[in-house]
Amino acid sequence: MKNIFIINAHEYYPFAEGKLNNSFTEKAKNYFEEKGYNIRVTTMKDDYDVEQEIENHLWADVVFLQSPVNWMGHPWSFKKYADMVYTTGMMGRLCQNDGRSADEPKKNYGTGGMLGGKKYMLSLTFNAPKEAFNDKNEYLFGGKSVDDLFFPTHMNFRFFEMTPLETFASYDVMKNPEIENDFVRFEKHLEKHFPALVMETK
Image (tube, rainbow, N blue to C red; front, side):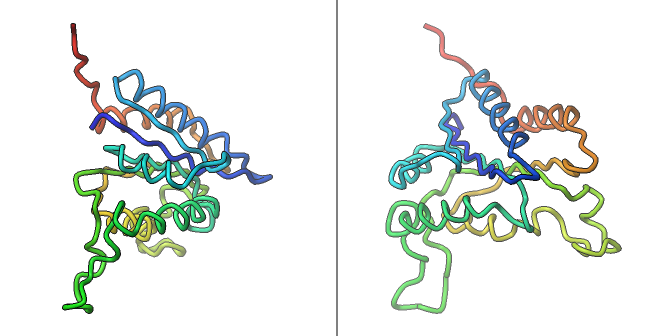
């Protein structure tokens, strides 16, 4: 895994300017570069070309998605990105339609992915505290995990035959932030999954 495509899904809101997700993106970029990886970065607030974004996915060994969590999902700008880029890539580049055949139209939905061997990682920032998850006594999520909440995102990547790396989450970032500790955890998380590459010597 030497090519890392970072998607920064930050979105500006008056109550949350996106600085934290930009900081995580920058820390990830710096970490990967220092460890010898090749990096490409796309940010939702910037203009992007759909064809180039498809090429970025084909080039990447790992897609790293850095995103705030707004209303139990990604910001609208990343949903727009997915609608435009992934829909365009459906016809033979990211996947071959939805995998079904005329002979068996009721079977094998979602098996048309063409990015087998590639991986992805979610890195998420929450207003919710960590304790809101994985606890059946907690009202909102009722025992569900972060990955349960982001099941649709996991299925989007699975649709392309990509496999997940462990999700990272920064919790309670608005009311009880522990940002410096989160940055430490983040670097350890990256070290766990992305060791330094062996650099070729001449």
